[in-house]
Amino acid sequence: MTNSLQATVGPRDFARFYLPLVATSYLLTATNPLLAAALARTSDPATALAGYGVAFALIGVIYAPLLVVQQVAAARLLSVGDLAPVRRFTIAIGLLFSGIAALVAFTPVGVFIFEEIVGVHDAILDEALSAMTALWPVPALTGVRALHQGRLVAGHRTSPIAFATGARASVLAVVAFSLTTTPVGAWLGGIAFTAGLAAEALFVTFAEAPTPTVPEHTERESEGEDRLLSFSGPLMVNVVLWWTTPLIINSVLARTPEPDCSIAAFTVVEAVAWFLTAPVGQLQHASLALVDSRKAHERVRVYAGGLAVSVTLFLGILAIPSIREAILWTGFRLDPSLLEPAGLAFPVAALYPALYGHRQYYQGLFVRVGCTGLVGRGAVLRIVVILAAAPLLLGPMGANGARLGVTLAIVGLLAEAVFLEVMARVRVLSCLDDIAQVEVAR
Image (cartoon, rainbow, N blue to C red; front, side, top):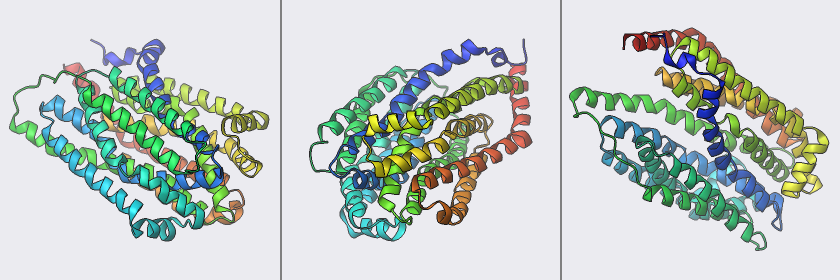
Protein backbone atom coordinates (compact mmCIF):
# COMPACT_ATOMS: atom_id res chain seq x y z
CA MET A 1 0.00 0.00 0.00
CA THR A 2 1.26 3.52 -0.79
CA ASN A 3 1.88 6.09 1.91
CA SER A 4 -1.27 7.89 0.85
CA LEU A 5 -4.04 7.15 -1.56
CA GLN A 6 -4.46 10.88 -2.13
CA ALA A 7 -0.81 11.28 -3.04
CA THR A 8 -1.68 9.93 -6.48
CA VAL A 9 -4.19 12.71 -7.19
CA GLY A 10 -3.53 14.14 -10.64
CA PRO A 11 -4.67 17.25 -12.51
CA ARG A 12 -7.75 15.51 -13.88
CA ASP A 13 -8.74 14.25 -10.44
CA PHE A 14 -8.37 17.73 -9.03
CA ALA A 15 -10.40 19.25 -11.89
CA ARG A 16 -13.16 16.62 -11.56
CA PHE A 17 -13.42 17.33 -7.83
CA TYR A 18 -13.16 21.10 -8.02
CA LEU A 19 -15.07 22.25 -11.11
CA PRO A 20 -18.55 21.73 -9.57
CA LEU A 21 -17.41 23.84 -6.62
CA VAL A 22 -16.36 26.61 -9.01
CA ALA A 23 -19.86 26.64 -10.50
CA THR A 24 -21.41 26.87 -7.04
CA SER A 25 -19.04 29.64 -6.05
CA TYR A 26 -19.91 31.67 -9.14
CA LEU A 27 -23.61 31.38 -8.36
CA LEU A 28 -22.99 32.56 -4.81
CA THR A 29 -20.80 35.50 -5.74
CA ALA A 30 -23.12 36.58 -8.57
CA THR A 31 -25.33 38.13 -5.89
CA ASN A 32 -23.25 41.26 -5.34
CA PRO A 33 -22.69 42.21 -9.01
CA LEU A 34 -26.38 41.68 -9.76
CA LEU A 35 -27.45 43.90 -6.90
CA ALA A 36 -24.79 46.52 -7.65
CA ALA A 37 -25.90 46.63 -11.29
CA ALA A 38 -29.53 47.11 -10.24
CA LEU A 39 -28.71 49.76 -7.62
CA ALA A 40 -26.56 51.63 -10.15
CA ARG A 41 -29.70 52.06 -12.28
CA THR A 42 -31.74 53.79 -9.55
CA SER A 43 -32.42 57.53 -9.46
CA ASP A 44 -29.58 58.26 -7.00
CA PRO A 45 -27.08 55.43 -7.56
CA ALA A 46 -24.22 56.72 -5.40
CA THR A 47 -26.37 57.08 -2.30
CA ALA A 48 -28.24 53.82 -2.90
CA LEU A 49 -25.03 51.86 -3.42
CA ALA A 50 -23.38 53.41 -0.37
CA GLY A 51 -26.42 52.85 1.86
CA TYR A 52 -26.87 49.25 0.80
CA GLY A 53 -23.14 48.57 1.10
CA VAL A 54 -23.12 49.75 4.71
CA ALA A 55 -26.33 47.89 5.62
CA PHE A 56 -25.20 44.64 4.02
CA ALA A 57 -21.83 44.85 5.79
CA LEU A 58 -23.67 45.08 9.13
CA ILE A 59 -26.16 42.29 8.41
CA GLY A 60 -23.23 40.13 7.30
CA VAL A 61 -21.65 40.50 10.73
CA ILE A 62 -24.96 39.62 12.41
CA TYR A 63 -25.66 36.45 10.44
CA ALA A 64 -22.04 35.25 10.02
CA PRO A 65 -22.00 32.87 13.06
CA LEU A 66 -24.90 30.92 11.54
CA LEU A 67 -22.83 29.99 8.49
CA VAL A 68 -20.99 27.29 10.45
CA VAL A 69 -24.27 25.50 11.20
CA GLN A 70 -23.81 23.56 7.95
CA GLN A 71 -20.61 21.94 9.21
CA VAL A 72 -22.03 21.34 12.68
CA ALA A 73 -25.24 19.76 11.32
CA ALA A 74 -23.36 17.46 8.93
CA ALA A 75 -20.93 16.37 11.65
CA ARG A 76 -23.79 15.69 14.10
CA LEU A 77 -25.68 13.54 11.60
CA LEU A 78 -22.60 11.60 10.54
CA SER A 79 -21.48 10.90 14.11
CA VAL A 80 -24.75 10.53 16.03
CA GLY A 81 -27.58 10.57 13.49
CA ASP A 82 -29.67 13.04 15.51
CA LEU A 83 -30.23 16.58 14.22
CA ALA A 84 -32.70 17.74 16.88
CA PRO A 85 -30.22 19.58 19.18
CA VAL A 86 -28.67 21.42 16.24
CA ARG A 87 -32.14 22.31 14.92
CA ARG A 88 -33.20 23.76 18.27
CA PHE A 89 -29.96 25.72 18.58
CA THR A 90 -30.26 27.07 15.04
CA ILE A 91 -33.84 28.22 15.46
CA ALA A 92 -33.06 29.94 18.77
CA ILE A 93 -29.92 31.71 17.53
CA GLY A 94 -31.48 32.59 14.18
CA LEU A 95 -34.48 34.24 15.81
CA LEU A 96 -32.24 36.02 18.32
CA PHE A 97 -29.98 37.48 15.64
CA SER A 98 -32.93 38.44 13.42
CA GLY A 99 -34.36 40.20 16.46
CA ILE A 100 -31.12 42.15 16.82
CA ALA A 101 -31.30 43.08 13.14
CA ALA A 102 -34.92 44.20 13.61
CA LEU A 103 -33.81 46.48 16.46
CA VAL A 104 -31.31 48.08 14.10
CA ALA A 105 -33.97 48.48 11.40
CA PHE A 106 -36.88 49.81 13.45
CA THR A 107 -35.48 51.50 16.58
CA PRO A 108 -32.97 54.27 17.38
CA VAL A 109 -30.35 51.54 17.86
CA GLY A 110 -29.79 51.59 14.10
CA VAL A 111 -29.25 55.34 14.03
CA PHE A 112 -26.70 55.05 16.82
CA ILE A 113 -24.78 52.22 15.15
CA PHE A 114 -24.68 53.75 11.70
CA GLU A 115 -23.96 57.32 12.88
CA GLU A 116 -21.69 56.84 15.90
CA ILE A 117 -19.92 53.56 15.07
CA VAL A 118 -19.91 53.33 11.27
CA GLY A 119 -19.89 57.10 10.79
CA VAL A 120 -22.45 57.61 8.01
CA HIS A 121 -24.93 60.48 8.04
CA ASP A 122 -27.81 62.14 6.19
CA ALA A 123 -28.86 60.44 2.94
CA ILE A 124 -26.56 57.43 3.33
CA LEU A 125 -27.92 56.86 6.84
CA ASP A 126 -31.50 56.93 5.56
CA GLU A 127 -30.71 54.49 2.78
CA ALA A 128 -28.89 52.11 5.14
CA LEU A 129 -31.85 52.05 7.53
CA SER A 130 -34.21 51.52 4.60
CA ALA A 131 -32.20 48.50 3.46
CA MET A 132 -32.22 47.06 7.00
CA THR A 133 -36.04 47.09 7.05
CA ALA A 134 -35.85 44.40 4.35
CA LEU A 135 -32.68 42.60 5.51
CA TRP A 136 -33.64 41.86 9.15
CA PRO A 137 -35.02 38.31 8.43
CA VAL A 138 -31.68 37.25 6.83
CA PRO A 139 -30.08 35.68 9.97
CA ALA A 140 -33.04 33.34 10.56
CA LEU A 141 -33.18 32.39 6.87
CA THR A 142 -29.41 31.80 6.86
CA GLY A 143 -29.72 29.42 9.80
CA VAL A 144 -32.50 27.43 8.12
CA ARG A 145 -30.52 27.22 4.88
CA ALA A 146 -27.31 26.12 6.63
CA LEU A 147 -29.13 23.52 8.73
CA HIS A 148 -30.62 21.78 5.71
CA GLN A 149 -27.48 22.17 3.62
CA GLY A 150 -25.69 20.23 6.35
CA ARG A 151 -28.43 17.59 6.26
CA LEU A 152 -28.03 17.23 2.49
CA VAL A 153 -24.24 17.04 2.71
CA ALA A 154 -24.46 14.30 5.32
CA GLY A 155 -26.86 12.41 3.05
CA HIS A 156 -24.50 12.80 0.06
CA ARG A 157 -27.04 14.85 -1.90
CA THR A 158 -25.27 18.02 -3.03
CA SER A 159 -27.15 18.60 -6.29
CA PRO A 160 -30.16 20.18 -4.52
CA ILE A 161 -27.76 22.65 -2.91
CA ALA A 162 -26.46 23.79 -6.30
CA PHE A 163 -30.01 23.97 -7.68
CA ALA A 164 -31.15 26.05 -4.71
CA THR A 165 -28.22 28.44 -5.15
CA GLY A 166 -29.20 28.93 -8.79
CA ALA A 167 -32.79 29.59 -7.73
CA ARG A 168 -31.61 32.23 -5.29
CA ALA A 169 -29.65 34.07 -7.98
CA SER A 170 -32.62 33.94 -10.36
CA VAL A 171 -35.17 35.23 -7.85
CA LEU A 172 -32.77 37.94 -6.69
CA ALA A 173 -32.18 39.17 -10.25
CA VAL A 174 -35.89 39.23 -11.14
CA VAL A 175 -36.86 41.14 -7.99
CA ALA A 176 -33.95 43.60 -8.18
CA PHE A 177 -34.31 44.62 -11.82
CA SER A 178 -38.10 44.79 -11.63
CA LEU A 179 -37.72 47.52 -8.97
CA THR A 180 -35.12 49.70 -10.72
CA THR A 181 -37.80 52.05 -12.08
CA THR A 182 -39.26 52.70 -8.62
CA PRO A 183 -37.87 55.24 -6.12
CA VAL A 184 -36.91 52.65 -3.49
CA GLY A 185 -33.11 53.12 -3.41
CA ALA A 186 -31.16 50.77 -1.16
CA TRP A 187 -34.39 49.00 -0.09
CA LEU A 188 -34.27 47.40 -3.54
CA GLY A 189 -31.06 45.56 -2.62
CA GLY A 190 -32.42 44.48 0.75
CA ILE A 191 -35.71 43.06 -0.51
CA ALA A 192 -34.04 41.33 -3.49
CA PHE A 193 -31.40 39.66 -1.31
CA THR A 194 -33.96 38.52 1.26
CA ALA A 195 -36.31 37.16 -1.41
CA GLY A 196 -33.50 35.20 -3.06
CA LEU A 197 -32.30 33.77 0.25
CA ALA A 198 -35.87 32.79 1.18
CA ALA A 199 -36.22 30.89 -2.10
CA GLU A 200 -32.92 29.08 -1.47
CA ALA A 201 -33.90 28.17 2.10
CA LEU A 202 -37.27 26.87 0.89
CA PHE A 203 -35.71 24.59 -1.74
CA VAL A 204 -33.17 22.98 0.60
CA THR A 205 -35.74 22.59 3.39
CA PHE A 206 -37.99 20.38 1.27
CA ALA A 207 -35.18 18.51 -0.52
CA GLU A 208 -35.04 14.90 0.63
CA ALA A 209 -31.89 13.17 1.81
CA PRO A 210 -31.33 9.83 3.55
CA THR A 211 -30.27 9.90 7.20
CA PRO A 212 -26.76 8.44 7.51
CA THR A 213 -26.39 5.11 9.28
CA VAL A 214 -24.27 5.60 12.40
CA PRO A 215 -22.95 3.30 15.13
CA GLU A 216 -24.72 3.06 18.47
CA HIS A 217 -24.13 6.21 20.49
CA THR A 218 -21.36 5.73 23.04
CA GLU A 219 -19.80 7.69 25.88
CA ARG A 220 -16.75 8.31 23.73
CA GLU A 221 -18.93 9.89 21.05
CA SER A 222 -20.48 12.19 23.66
CA GLU A 223 -16.99 13.43 24.47
CA GLY A 224 -16.55 13.99 20.76
CA GLU A 225 -19.55 16.32 20.73
CA ASP A 226 -17.91 18.45 23.41
CA ARG A 227 -14.78 18.48 21.29
CA LEU A 228 -16.89 19.67 18.36
CA LEU A 229 -17.80 22.87 20.22
CA SER A 230 -14.17 23.79 20.83
CA PHE A 231 -13.35 22.75 17.26
CA SER A 232 -16.07 24.99 15.78
CA GLY A 233 -15.50 28.04 17.99
CA PRO A 234 -12.44 29.42 16.16
CA LEU A 235 -14.18 28.83 12.84
CA MET A 236 -17.10 30.96 14.02
CA VAL A 237 -14.67 33.69 15.06
CA ASN A 238 -13.04 33.47 11.65
CA VAL A 239 -16.35 33.85 9.80
CA VAL A 240 -17.51 36.75 11.98
CA LEU A 241 -14.24 38.61 11.49
CA TRP A 242 -14.36 38.01 7.73
CA TRP A 243 -17.78 39.60 7.53
CA THR A 244 -16.69 42.39 9.88
CA THR A 245 -13.97 43.48 7.44
CA PRO A 246 -16.25 45.32 4.96
CA LEU A 247 -17.96 47.10 7.84
CA ILE A 248 -14.61 48.26 9.23
CA ILE A 249 -13.46 49.45 5.81
CA ASN A 250 -16.76 51.25 5.17
CA SER A 251 -16.33 52.95 8.55
CA VAL A 252 -12.91 54.18 7.41
CA LEU A 253 -14.29 55.35 4.06
CA ALA A 254 -17.06 57.24 5.87
CA ARG A 255 -14.29 59.53 7.13
CA THR A 256 -12.90 60.40 3.70
CA PRO A 257 -13.62 63.80 2.06
CA GLU A 258 -16.38 62.32 -0.15
CA PRO A 259 -17.83 59.37 1.80
CA ASP A 260 -20.78 58.66 -0.51
CA CYS A 261 -18.61 58.33 -3.62
CA SER A 262 -15.91 56.42 -1.69
CA ILE A 263 -18.29 53.81 -0.31
CA ALA A 264 -20.28 53.51 -3.55
CA ALA A 265 -17.18 53.04 -5.74
CA PHE A 266 -15.68 50.58 -3.23
CA THR A 267 -18.96 48.60 -3.22
CA VAL A 268 -18.88 48.28 -7.02
CA VAL A 269 -15.20 47.26 -7.15
CA GLU A 270 -15.72 44.67 -4.42
CA ALA A 271 -18.74 43.22 -6.21
CA VAL A 272 -16.87 42.80 -9.51
CA ALA A 273 -13.55 41.69 -8.01
CA TRP A 274 -14.99 39.05 -5.70
CA PHE A 275 -17.21 37.67 -8.46
CA LEU A 276 -14.13 37.25 -10.68
CA THR A 277 -12.22 35.75 -7.72
CA ALA A 278 -14.88 33.05 -7.32
CA PRO A 279 -12.81 30.17 -8.81
CA VAL A 280 -10.50 30.15 -5.77
CA GLY A 281 -13.27 30.63 -3.21
CA GLN A 282 -13.74 26.90 -2.53
CA LEU A 283 -10.09 25.84 -2.27
CA GLN A 284 -10.57 25.00 1.41
CA HIS A 285 -12.59 21.99 0.26
CA ALA A 286 -9.72 20.83 -1.95
CA SER A 287 -7.18 20.85 0.89
CA LEU A 288 -9.71 19.41 3.32
CA ALA A 289 -10.75 16.48 1.10
CA LEU A 290 -7.68 15.74 -1.01
CA VAL A 291 -4.74 16.24 1.36
CA ASP A 292 -3.83 13.46 3.80
CA SER A 293 -0.02 13.54 3.61
CA ARG A 294 2.89 15.88 2.96
CA LYS A 295 3.22 14.53 -0.59
CA ALA A 296 -0.46 15.10 -1.33
CA HIS A 297 -0.15 18.62 0.08
CA GLU A 298 2.73 19.40 -2.26
CA ARG A 299 0.79 18.22 -5.31
CA VAL A 300 -2.59 19.76 -4.50
CA ARG A 301 -0.91 23.03 -3.51
CA VAL A 302 0.61 23.21 -7.00
CA TYR A 303 -2.82 22.82 -8.61
CA ALA A 304 -4.41 25.34 -6.24
CA GLY A 305 -1.55 27.80 -6.70
CA GLY A 306 -1.73 27.46 -10.47
CA LEU A 307 -5.45 28.22 -10.39
CA ALA A 308 -4.95 31.25 -8.12
CA VAL A 309 -2.16 32.66 -10.30
CA SER A 310 -4.25 32.15 -13.45
CA VAL A 311 -7.22 34.01 -11.99
CA THR A 312 -4.90 36.78 -10.77
CA LEU A 313 -3.45 37.21 -14.25
CA PHE A 314 -6.96 37.28 -15.70
CA LEU A 315 -7.94 40.08 -13.32
CA GLY A 316 -4.72 41.87 -14.22
CA ILE A 317 -5.77 41.84 -17.88
CA LEU A 318 -9.23 43.13 -16.99
CA ALA A 319 -7.56 45.94 -15.00
CA ILE A 320 -6.21 47.49 -18.24
CA PRO A 321 -7.86 50.95 -18.37
CA SER A 322 -9.90 50.50 -21.55
CA ILE A 323 -11.15 47.05 -20.49
CA ARG A 324 -12.01 47.91 -16.90
CA GLU A 325 -13.87 51.07 -17.93
CA ALA A 326 -15.89 49.08 -20.45
CA ILE A 327 -16.81 46.56 -17.74
CA LEU A 328 -17.75 49.19 -15.18
CA TRP A 329 -19.70 51.28 -17.68
CA THR A 330 -21.49 48.43 -19.45
CA GLY A 331 -22.35 46.53 -16.30
CA PHE A 332 -23.10 49.37 -13.90
CA ARG A 333 -23.60 52.55 -15.96
CA LEU A 334 -21.43 54.45 -13.50
CA ASP A 335 -21.29 58.20 -13.85
CA PRO A 336 -17.82 59.82 -14.09
CA SER A 337 -17.71 60.62 -10.36
CA LEU A 338 -17.78 56.88 -9.61
CA LEU A 339 -16.21 55.47 -12.77
CA GLU A 340 -12.77 57.05 -12.25
CA PRO A 341 -12.19 56.08 -8.58
CA ALA A 342 -13.56 52.58 -9.18
CA GLY A 343 -11.28 52.16 -12.18
CA LEU A 344 -8.20 53.26 -10.25
CA ALA A 345 -8.96 50.76 -7.48
CA PHE A 346 -9.46 47.83 -9.83
CA PRO A 347 -5.74 47.07 -10.47
CA VAL A 348 -5.14 46.74 -6.72
CA ALA A 349 -8.10 44.35 -6.43
CA ALA A 350 -6.42 42.13 -9.05
CA LEU A 351 -4.31 40.76 -6.15
CA TYR A 352 -7.38 39.28 -4.45
CA PRO A 353 -7.27 35.81 -6.12
CA ALA A 354 -3.65 35.08 -5.16
CA LEU A 355 -4.05 36.11 -1.52
CA TYR A 356 -7.58 34.82 -1.03
CA GLY A 357 -6.77 31.51 -2.71
CA HIS A 358 -3.78 31.08 -0.39
CA ARG A 359 -5.99 31.84 2.61
CA GLN A 360 -8.71 29.41 1.60
CA TYR A 361 -6.32 26.56 0.83
CA TYR A 362 -4.40 26.83 4.10
CA GLN A 363 -7.50 27.29 6.22
CA GLY A 364 -8.87 24.03 4.80
CA LEU A 365 -5.53 22.38 5.52
CA PHE A 366 -5.58 23.59 9.12
CA VAL A 367 -9.11 22.24 9.58
CA ARG A 368 -7.96 18.92 8.08
CA VAL A 369 -5.35 18.46 10.81
CA GLY A 370 -7.52 19.89 13.59
CA CYS A 371 -5.65 23.19 14.09
CA THR A 372 -8.72 25.43 13.91
CA GLY A 373 -7.30 27.73 16.59
CA LEU A 374 -4.69 28.92 14.10
CA VAL A 375 -7.47 29.81 11.67
CA GLY A 376 -9.05 32.08 14.28
CA ARG A 377 -5.71 33.68 15.17
CA GLY A 378 -4.99 34.43 11.52
CA ALA A 379 -8.34 36.18 11.21
CA VAL A 380 -7.67 38.26 14.33
CA LEU A 381 -4.26 39.26 12.96
CA ARG A 382 -5.83 40.38 9.67
CA ILE A 383 -8.30 42.66 11.47
CA VAL A 384 -5.59 44.09 13.74
CA VAL A 385 -3.40 44.93 10.74
CA ILE A 386 -6.31 46.62 8.92
CA LEU A 387 -7.13 48.73 11.98
CA ALA A 388 -3.47 49.69 12.36
CA ALA A 389 -3.05 50.56 8.68
CA ALA A 390 -6.27 52.58 8.36
CA PRO A 391 -5.14 55.80 10.12
CA LEU A 392 -1.77 55.62 8.35
CA LEU A 393 -3.34 55.39 4.89
CA LEU A 394 -6.40 57.60 5.41
CA GLY A 395 -4.49 60.84 4.89
CA PRO A 396 -2.44 60.00 1.79
CA MET A 397 -5.14 57.88 0.09
CA GLY A 398 -8.35 59.49 1.35
CA ALA A 399 -8.95 61.32 -1.92
CA ASN A 400 -9.65 57.97 -3.61
CA GLY A 401 -11.67 56.05 -1.08
CA ALA A 402 -12.21 53.01 -3.31
CA ARG A 403 -8.49 52.46 -3.72
CA LEU A 404 -8.00 53.02 0.01
CA GLY A 405 -10.61 50.39 0.84
CA VAL A 406 -9.14 47.79 -1.51
CA THR A 407 -5.62 48.51 -0.26
CA LEU A 408 -6.70 47.94 3.33
CA ALA A 409 -8.24 44.60 2.34
CA ILE A 410 -5.02 43.59 0.54
CA VAL A 411 -2.80 44.57 3.47
CA GLY A 412 -4.91 42.47 5.84
CA LEU A 413 -4.93 39.45 3.52
CA LEU A 414 -1.17 39.70 3.06
CA ALA A 415 -0.57 39.65 6.82
CA GLU A 416 -2.88 36.65 7.22
CA ALA A 417 -1.14 34.83 4.34
CA VAL A 418 2.28 35.24 5.96
CA PHE A 419 0.95 33.99 9.30
CA LEU A 420 -0.73 30.92 7.77
CA GLU A 421 2.36 30.07 5.70
CA VAL A 422 4.66 30.25 8.73
CA MET A 423 2.30 28.25 10.94
CA ALA A 424 1.90 25.61 8.22
CA ARG A 425 5.64 25.07 8.10
CA VAL A 426 6.05 25.12 11.88
CA ARG A 427 3.09 22.98 12.99
CA VAL A 428 0.85 21.61 10.25
CA LEU A 429 3.21 19.64 8.03
CA SER A 430 4.25 17.40 10.92
CA CYS A 431 0.56 16.72 11.60
CA LEU A 432 0.19 15.59 7.98
CA ASP A 433 2.91 13.01 8.61
CA ASP A 434 0.88 11.68 11.55
CA ILE A 435 -2.23 11.40 9.35
CA ALA A 436 -0.25 9.54 6.70
CA GLN A 437 0.99 7.05 9.31
CA VAL A 438 -2.59 6.38 10.40
CA GLU A 439 -3.56 5.70 6.78
CA VAL A 440 -0.70 3.23 6.43
CA ALA A 441 -1.74 1.45 9.64
CA ARG A 442 -5.22 1.00 8.20
